[in-house]
Length: 216
Ligand code: MG
Image: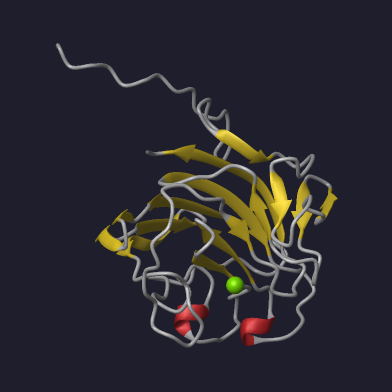
């Protein structure tokens, strides 16, 4: 009975809604919490409560820095199917700006497994393919523990758990390093907190209802 009591948090009224201690990064109205990766304000399209990648404008990143976190994010690949494999509904969530959880239209769209939706890109395929059809809203709930460095030395690698549409697709995976393309991942030391970013891979992917809880 002497143990300290956990903080009281009011959960969202409906599934997916932010709890009282979450930082809301996008509620559908504006991109004030975001910056362009190329510098200046984020300029992705806002419409009907979602934001949409504007191809060639570049990725966007949070104004605020984050380390270990619980992140809720909803996305939809274009309803009109264009392209295939990596060219279809490609975007991504770069935790700390470097560890990518792949966003891709992986509904009846074959590609290399560590590049499909829910993959830790280039490292680890999702446990199952829990994708909804193109145009439908999907959820990622991500629990991420940042890596710990002592100067140049890696003390503890990052770990990640991901649920897609309520289905476990990454189970406490030990991240192997910064996301690379056609190269083995390796860690590059970095700060304890950094912005996370959303990728512009040339496809008009949509995002909505983004909130985060810091775990540090
Ligand atoms: Mg991607």
